[in-house]
Length: 241
Ligand SMILES: [Zn+2]
Ligand SMILES: [Zn+2]
Figure (cartoon, rainbow, N blue to C red):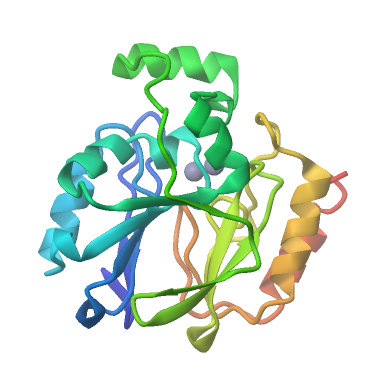
């Protein structure tokens, strides 16, 4: 199901030993002002680019990459994507943008052991994830992109600079790895993560009217039951201290 609703396209992640995040393309194609959300795992750039082309989307219409957060499984193929879409800007929450500009990769890998594993598996050198960020997001702003208005909600807890993108007219939420289908939530044991913050972020999301849930992994949901986020919080709150 590549097209979820008008102006929202879905490219499923292709998990390997390490998961590959889903990629979304948002914006009305006629606007020629599209945004790619979360590139994915190292090595998946070609797959994502070919999938975009198959949907009939012109690469030159993609004007920016927006990251829900910068974990390895989301940012891994960013440089592959940037090679193919050279003029695309990069928009990331300021709390993860600033470290990336300095070459601080603690958020990218989350933990030292994982860093060594990824660097060995993919032959990645230290400093590979140093990027200049074109726009640093704060949370609370409304992005007028692709003929749609997307609200940015800062939802730390899984990582410091996690954001959700929310499109109110179609009750559509792109929450990165903060909440998934089947009452699952993102892990909160990595660098910069925090269970109590995650709970607060989930409560922030619970205030929104959400019908379509487009997470970073696992199934997407197009008919979410009401109060889904709140019920998910209830299942987890004893652990989120
Ligand atoms: Zn992820
Ligand atoms: Zn993550």
